[in-house]
Amino acid sequence: MKKTVLFLSAVLLCASAMAQHSDQEVKEDIQRHRGMAAAHEGAAKCLEAGKGEKVCMAELQAACKGLALGKYCGMRHAH
Image 1 (tube, helix red, strand yellow):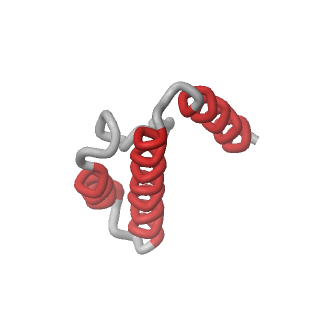
Image 2: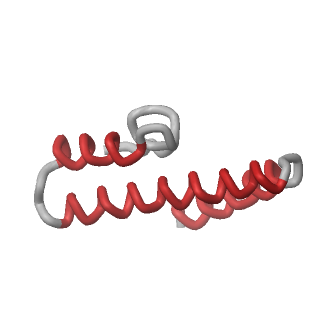
């Protein structure tokens, strides 16, 4: 349920932001979001492989360099 609400909120925010951006900016945002999604998918697979949180976070940070703000690649959650 939390993920659904978070996803819908993100979609609404993106839609609002896209209405104010040029076509080129929208295309860049799309690529950035796809890059972040791929980085997070990689982090999930890393954790599934049992590599450990420190290793997987380091890989996530490397994959997200230049894509998102902060060490969590645009996402933060509780552990």
